[in-house]
Amino acid sequence: MIKVGILGGTGFGAPDFLEDAGRIKVHTPYGAPSALVTTGRLEGVDVVTIPRHGEGHSIYPSLVNFRANIWAMKELGVTHILAVTAVGSLREEIEPGHLVFPDQFIDRTTRRPSTFFEGQQVCHIPMAEPFCMRLRKLLGTVANGLSLEYHGRGTVITIEGPRFSTRAESRMFRQWGADIINMSTVPEVVLAREAGICYAAIAMSTDYDCWHESEEPVTWELIQKTMESNVAHVRQLLVAAVPAIDFADCSCREAVTTSTL
Image 1: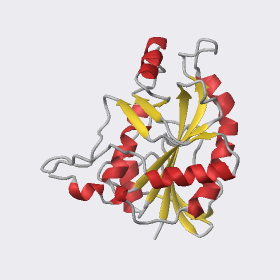
Image 2: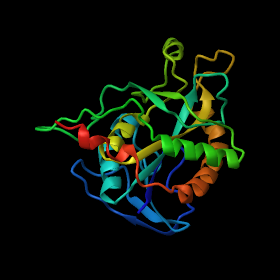
Image 3: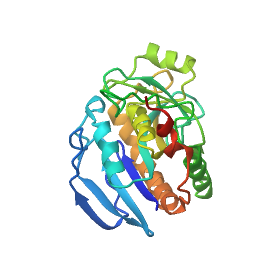
Image 4: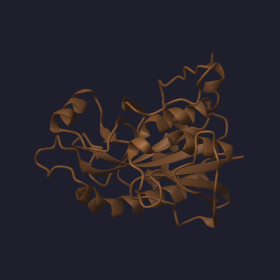
């Protein structure tokens, strides 16, 4: 049975397109998720959603309880996660308003617990292909059918935040091969793999990061300018993609079984 989790990012809270929507409280060994969990259905598919940054964007990136969010999804039977995230672009061709379905990440976080396995058990989870390839391919097919501007792959670099990058850092990240930048993908994607859940990110390009000197420096106000159209496109994508998920067997779900000591 397929159940889809949606993790909403900046500008994208609980979706309003669910049928029979309700809110529940979920307790986890890691504390409370970012907010009450919304459950509902979309064209017959069970859906679970959590706004990553809480109600009204009240939780800054380093304090998001990523483990509680993913644990709650697992506890409720989620099999596939579509994670919405706002990103800055590090490439000229990834214009504000475009969507990106990343296939790789670079981790520049420093303060976040990134595993469920503590104490007497260690998990060396494989991360060569961190995002579910089958979900990414499906998102590309759906986006193409909707005539959305998207990039089917890319490397996202996740920084600690909440501050934005300096221009020197932004240039360095480009040299490292990063294509987009955010503050939320890691450790979320890692925890999803440990939980045996297929995970793909829907990255909304809101701005050129500050490497792009012909553009004004990135600010919160600038990000919000492109957010409205981005959210509309993501809504279209989710409404079409969720009912199209048709696979339950995937290597993402089995990786953890051979990774623990």
